[in-house]
Length: 260
Image (cartoon, rainbow, N blue to C red; front, side):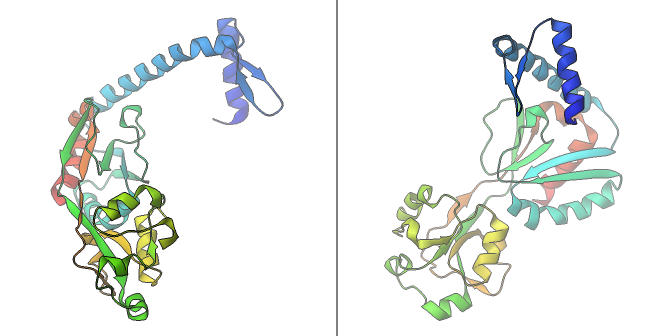
């Protein structure tokens, strides 16, 4: 909503309830005590509205409309386009929106209809299907290795530059468990984006960990240390249980499951 529309909605709600929900300052709206006390009730109403929407969407029979898919930027870039090519042939009237983000979309709040995640969901209201697992391994450009030399031991690796890991301090234990002792000083370029990691590694800016399906696709990259123990990567296809009866979402769900 625009700000004037939202202000009118808030004022109308306050008039209807006979309470002041917000204190208005020159720069913000602050919840009053009454607003704070009512907040949980409003949240319950919002959850109920979401459940109504989920149930109604699940009963729709038309294979038209929009399906929102949430996936990491790596999955969205390297794996989903070929699925969508088949989907366009099967259901040309469908509109697909892709949320390419490493943050999990809230399926229960309809932030997405379908999600691809690398961890099994714990919510019992979600329907999950495990897809083919993959693995992550080390990759570096041949140009970079020609310049600095190919490591012959884990100790050699510990002296080299790495890219990726937006929070490297959280991954150091993982590398140490595989015999590679690194510090944050080894990481000159940090990103949570797989697509950007690929670009940085291809430019010869250091070693990174990529899913083998992605890294092997670039002939200018190689595994600098084959003794490195690969990292197992689970892949789960997830949707809300009430969406299983919706033809358009079921079509997209089944096609992704089949192709991946």
